[in-house]
Length: 456
Image (cartoon, rainbow, N blue to C red):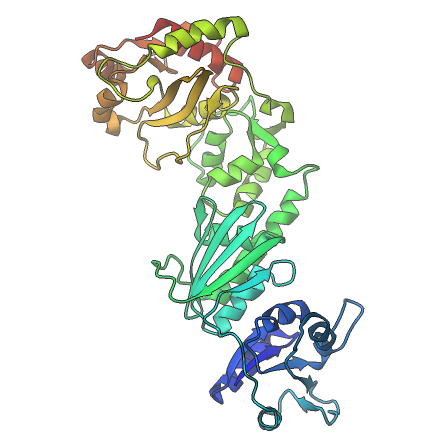
């Protein structure tokens, strides 16, 4: 026999489900009337056991009995569990009376089900939140893949024998992805039973993972509510009076990103720690004067050149590919990783710049920051060359065949040697653009124009 157990008190719900399973009954659980209705609509339960509190209608909405009757063409029979210390009606049984429950269940005629628990099951997040669903799967020791579709993208949660083993949401995974997933309020989910067949990235018990993710999501929402607009429209950057200090862990990583204006939405998406920790660190840095909020118009994009100049740039870019090299022509921008982080944000503020599909490498390796599309099928890659001495042997490979190599620093002996070995000239950004500011899209556009015009 398969039953759906519905109770408003989580400890009681979990305790009852375990006791009933020990009596060789297959038990699924639900935390409220909406979740119970969605799970019962799958047609795989012989009976619903529901607490008296959730059975009847309240000021908050329909009870389980009315909801099942209204929404299901053939609702399963319902047995109401009376609260301890109260008198049970003839149709009820006390929730602590396991033998009484079994007697009631034995009196019911068997029901032939049209579906099995091996079929995919669909839910809506408004009625059955992801957190509640994952806790139910953990209690029921289920295995399968939960696919979630939200306005912010697609997520996947993998469960094996009740243990949440992996979560992916966008480009993030693990607990950061889980916190974002449980925070989502609107969308659809589908659970496909079976071994998910993935390597376990998570080994903490599911209940602890979901609880921690819910706390982080709630705390993040409270911090985000401090702002008068969505965090995607809130921009911060380093304060003008900031001076370099010793390493401060997450704070230092945030300050590196905020060398140029960046939205909080982009910041929490780029860094790996939990969103709430990043946002909390920004608030703390603002309180100490290390960062400041800037106007949202910093997000306005600058053109690479005037309409009259673009034709000439296009002609230069069409010849930017080195002889014997495949792919687009390349402009190399060399600097310390922290300076490249600020410039990359300003670079994407240029109208013609398009971000690459692949994320930046975790190691300080040469990588494409953007593709500069000049129209009529002409484009060049703008490539970052992080100046980390340990990786200097790779630099000749990066600069070979480049149309131009530009450094944000005044001089760099190892880079000069790499350029000399590949017959490339090294140019200084400040020599090409006076008063160059790598955080301003207009200045970066001017630098790229100069680099296209001078060539190697």
